[in-house]
Image (cartoon, rainbow, N blue to C red; front, side, top):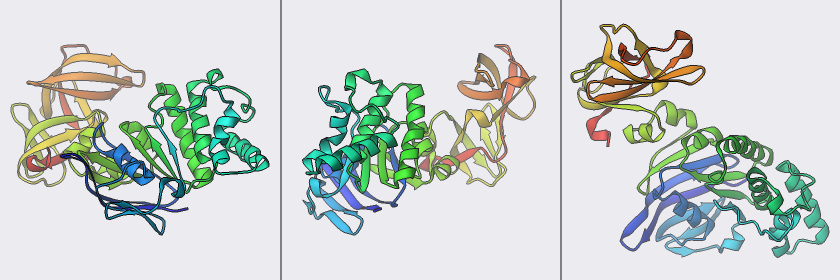
Length: 353
């Protein structure tokens, strides 16, 4: 197993810096995910590691080999021993599943017996034993994604690169393939680097997440670290589904102008700030209490175990996920919204862009 080191990587397209001095380490034997919106540079970095793009400057090392340095590729693509799964399946429709999986082995000169054995092993790993003679048109989307994975791991690459690997699947299949991807990584021990814009996917499969924006890394850490302690408001927002309010920090409380006070439980830097909290951490009370933010229920949605409320507080709207066991409040009900102890994230205005 080998890890990857990226140091001061820059990739420019004309006057645009798609990757702006990025440095990070990918530990061997785990899954590192680059998470960010379209255009943040994550796929460009992946292609630079693969050798499909030549970076402008910086350094890339795979294990103890420097494969790129000083604007020059030191090791060609075919000698980096990498596998890559693209967003499109890129499966040859006229070839059987076995022939698709064996393609990389054939171009590497493996013998017929070696190819057949490895194809069987790779298909068994992705739970497609017995599919060797089928054509791609006979498979579901999830099965085709498994074929792509089998083809990529068949020749035992040291690093597997995945570019939005689950983007073409529906919600149910994405959830299923997240589990399969992590299972395959654990069984093979292959170092994987994935890129995605899907926060749930990154949290589910990763050992390490690199949150990216505009060609730079905003934060690196485990899924728990990124979720529980986002480095700034932009990271918290990108993880999705947060309430984001303009506020003023005064000692251990946050004043939301004209709406009320939220207690943080910890000292906060005085001054203008962003008060951010997740809907599941919000608490709703009716009739309205003296604490929290005063508002009215605009809309309620029963979601089974929870009820999601849209609450209008002055000119702002807040989303609250409350247990359904408490019943459903009628639209127009006067309520107050508070935040669970320790769940309020406060960022100074200067760091909240």
